[in-house]
Image 1: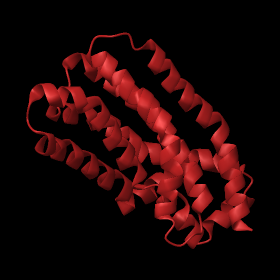
Image 2: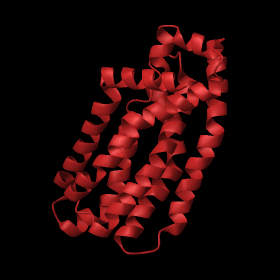
Image 3: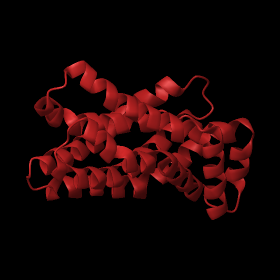
Length: 218
């Protein structure tokens, strides 16, 4: 599984799609929003939690269709499905690789972009914590959507339609953590709910994703 993770990371970094494209999109969102809503610091501070989380969500969505696509096209996915490694483990590794090349960089650069959106300083640690907790859920849910659409030509739009409704709870509680943190309110409830969502999808969805891959390979 470590070898598979290293292989997926090398392929993702060599292609440059998930890492560079996601970061560029996240940066564009943070730059364009102040131009659209105006430079008033109070307005930007109020909408910053939601904008940062929506930007991270959409940036994560950009590279989902690549999770299984290359392996399906060159036949590697058939080999992985019959390998001694459980397919559920293969799916979990691919979700982890997607998070490392998309969710982790987005989390690390988020304080710089929060500065552009005038997020209050007390919200920065909770922005990092919420993205660190929530972006793994985005990758796991996205891997499930990619498993459902693997093999479909031009399945990117369908993948987005399938995944976006499932992203809503993570988005709501992630943005709520940052908003409450920026306003000096207690964040334990939304933070625990966000952690619960991530733990729940990480425990359950690899099995559903593996079943979807098996069905699509028949």
